[in-house]
Image 1 (cartoon, one colour):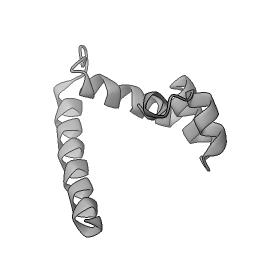
Image 2 (cartoon, one colour; image 1 turned 135 degrees about the horizontal axis):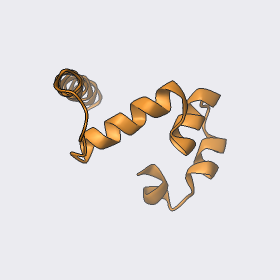
Image 3 (cartoon, helix red, strand yellow; image 1 turned 30 degrees about the vertical axis):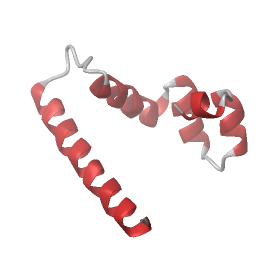
Image 4 (cartoon, rainbow, N blue to C red; image 1 turned 90 degrees about the vertical axis):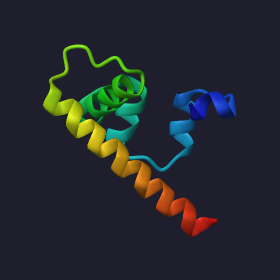
Length: 79
């Protein structure tokens, strides 16, 4: 989404940000451990979890709500 907001390619953005190689590979190629997590997260966000077991879906729901809570806490501290 950042690439679309800034009208810049992901490759270009990754070059300008201090990201580890593991994070860059995940973002650009959806590979590696983080790439697998990113693909699963995108599938969750787009409700495309066909074939994912219920235990994993339950964990994703927990992590999603925990991350929302964390984001709200951070935003409250900033605003």
